Amino acid sequence: MAAGGFCKLPNGTVVVALNLPSPAAEAPSGVRVLVHAQNRARALTRLRNLGLRPIYLRGNAAPPTPDEITAVLHHPDGLIWRTTPTAGLTVELWHPIRALLRRPAAQT
Image 1 (cartoon, rainbow, N blue to C red):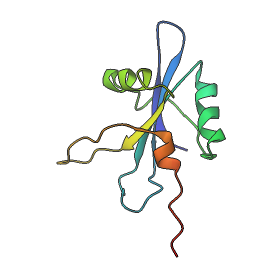
Image 2 (image 1 turned 120 degrees about the vertical axis):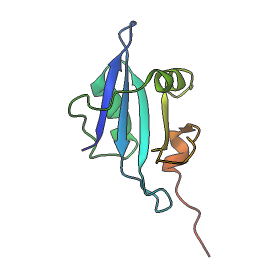
Image 3 (image 1 turned 60 degrees about the horizontal axis):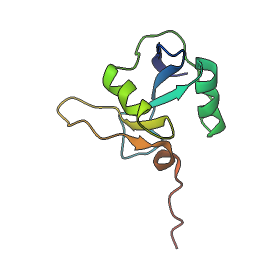
């Protein structure tokens, strides 16, 4: 389960924002994922198809901000992420989801 929310756009599509625990040890604060899709169910299905299986959206506690909506609408994949900002740190740029799901290179 993840905290997050959604925003329905005038054209009928939605932007879903989710706060997820970080899969990497170097980002202890977690990640914020944004998905643009036709509806909430399709947005969550896109994430589940990428391997993020236990993703559910309950409520609308942390909807996307206008800046986040603009960022995801201008990305060709419509699926981006960044680490969750912590107090005193500068805000990181958005990354394509491929950068989050990329497997580390095998060490020899």
